[in-house]
Length: 470
Image (tube, rainbow, N blue to C red; front, side, top):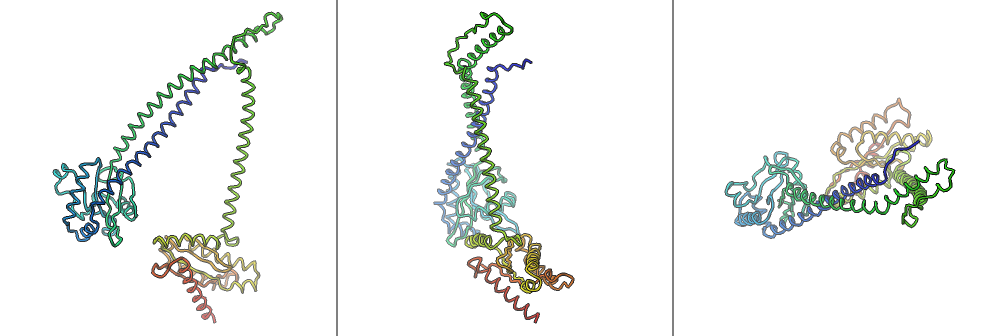
């Protein structure tokens, strides 16, 4: 059965064309991203230089007083003139100083200085004045973004949409002697200008890459034709001719091989064996790689499982003391950075010894597991830790911290209801002493300080509960 012929020369041309096309595409993408990164870095440096240059001409305390009082000083007007000159001399979109602040419970942006060119001043002499609230310019999300960048202690770079268009902004916080981040010095460059520069550069380079790719594929095909395809074609004709003449041939003289005079130094003759050996080696090589990847994946799964087991309490499946200590390090870092907002609930189970002594440790474990489950159900958005045999810690953050009063009341009510429910088995009547402490930056230096207060409050609750029962 004769198979459909696929000429080697055409196949090489098509595959070479696909390869070069993909190579050109990859090089074009790399060129685009490399130039984009380089261009933004250069803009970052340029904008940073402008901000630092303007900053050297700002009297911080005088400007801070102008912002507080709403009264322009002589130095204020000098700074306006200087920033206007920067607008004239540098190719930037905007240069301005603003102050994000809360307005009627919402975030807003106040103008302090908006630099302009002489042409702009002539056609809009009034402009924006000191402490003018630009409600029609910045939406709430943009105002929040400016506030977030202002709170930093370094220059920030970001893109934003505003009333004036799509800009790439560099923002430097202005900090007075009291450490207050009272205003933001900003310079904007139009993103469209940046994108045009990137597009122009990319188009030129893509054209150059395509031309080089076309030249390469032309040279490659000529070389391939001279060194491979033509010799193989001659060899094919010679072998096919010999095969035809050999079919049912009885005349030995007609079995003579017509030498096509291919001077390949036996490379064509050894090609089949080399390809076959290469495929065998490649198959073995790929098999080894696949086996290695499977082993690596198994090792990753084992390590992941070991990490879960190492930080999980085997009875209750909540986090154990080892994980609590990791979380404690994270919370201590938040405290050191001034962004901590949390509370701790310390819970110690009552009657565990009584359950163990009267009903056995198996039901004692049921008692611990059931009480822990009740805690987890109520504080379903907070991490729960078992740090001792009958001691549990709840770290209140985010939503549970905001709703702590309701959740703590719910927990106490649930425990009281459970402990008095005579319809349940003794190991299903959960009772616990509870202590709560809220982080106070004035007295707490670390998370353990809060934990100690929660533990003391828990002990007081346990004593009071014991006295009430007696």
